[in-house]
Image (cartoon, rainbow, N blue to C red; front, top):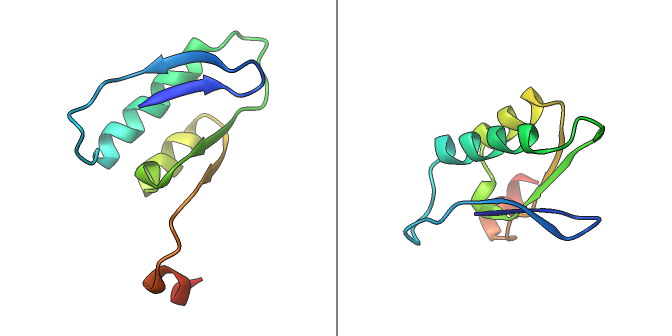
Amino acid sequence: MLAFIAETKEYLAGKLRAGKTISGEQVEKFIASLRPLLPSAVGKVTLRANSEFYCWQAVKAARAQDSAWSAVQKKVFAVAQKV
């Protein structure tokens, strides 16, 4: 997992994993660890993630930090029917 500052493309944080899917709890902890790394002058934060972070725990962690969020999910037939 990697986190970058979009405007400057600077590396913010990262965590190595075994290559298997990460749990919602791991996603939540990772997102929660990011805000304290930012300078206090930073106002609005938008989290953008791929489908690996697409879970309610990620939404909960983003909302807890008053951050906007966007997650990209592959369009599959079952998802397309729900949308």
